[in-house]
Length: 107
Image (tube, rainbow, N blue to C red):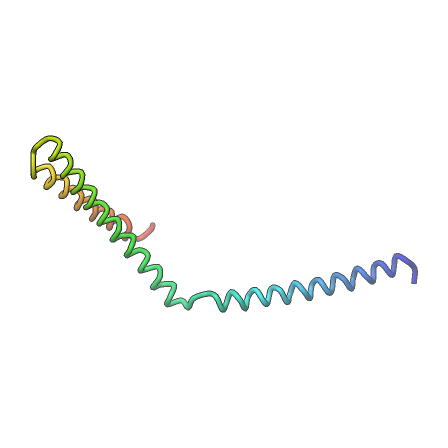
């Protein structure tokens, strides 16, 4: 056997070991991903809770902003309680619009 044949045999053996190691690593990664992934019913529940919390916070934020802006503008202009009532109503409408926007199906 000459020098080139030895080198080729060593490279073939090295490539075979690398392929075996890559296969073992892929299998190990798949096993860990299978252990870490939540069951499908938990993923659906997590998604539903996330959308619900997002919709709730959008609604509450719009109502609070409308009410607080109305209250401060009423104090500034001396029109208590009319602007607060109007802007609170607009905040509630904006809150319902935000819930609709968050909850509607994605096209």
